[in-house]
Amino acid sequence: MAEELSFPTGIGTSDADHIRLLGQDLAADLMGKVGFGELAFWLVAGRRPSPGETRVFEAVLVALADHGFTPTAIAARVTYASAPEALQGALAAGLLGGGSRFLGVTEDVGRFLSAYIGQINKYPEMDAEWDEIATRAVSETKRIPGLGHPVHKVQDPRTPVLIRIAEEEGLRGPHLRLFEAIGRVHPAILGKTLPLNGAGVCGAALADLGLPVEMLRGFALLARAAGLLGHLAEERRTNLGLEIYRTVDRNAVYREETPWPPSSR
Image (cartoon, rainbow, N blue to C red; front, side, top):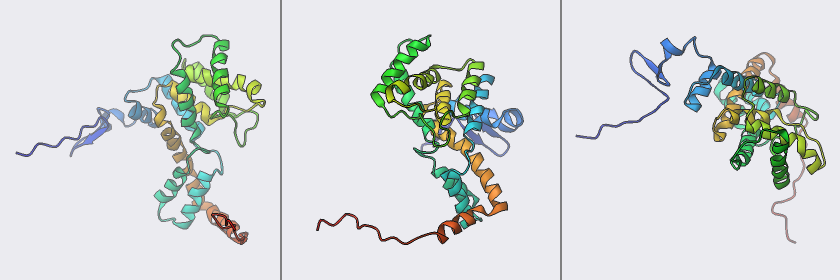
């Protein structure tokens, strides 16, 4: 007799009468009783978040949902203008643009801070002690992920709000403390003052919630999917993507490029 196949999962299964999700009956136990942010946390962490954790997590999702006409939003709009019958393609185009310059900093900061947090045997209690660790981190790295923002040159308005919410919920943990310390000590080391990027603070806050740093970009993309969907809904009314295309097309100028690789003659 052939061996019975088995594909174990802790996420969800279904049969003719029921849908199971995270060990719960989807219809009876979750729908109308669990918020989407809480569910997203639960799906990744494998545990149901506390109300405080849910508040911090959902504040992060809101902070990352949209930032105006970023390349991700423009990519989604122009793709939709080209193929309005494929909403999924336009949404995917925007999400594919989430990388080192946009959205990726959330994960980059989480990874960077976790590397230093992992070297600490006992977390400091005083800011001065965190400043010592931050000074070493900045001195060793120089280019710190999450320092600076292309628009917010003095302060990212999301940063103090996220820190305050985490403090109110008792979740201002070591990643946030270290990132705040980096914000205090870097001017003396780098010779310039840069704001803490709000998306980077999001990464620190998510790491303090115990979420795996390898998954943090996924949460940024989850949040941005909502923002992109809003852009696409607006695009249906405004056709701005077509105007963006026409503007670029009308102003395109031919320029002969230098051959690559350059000639040695």
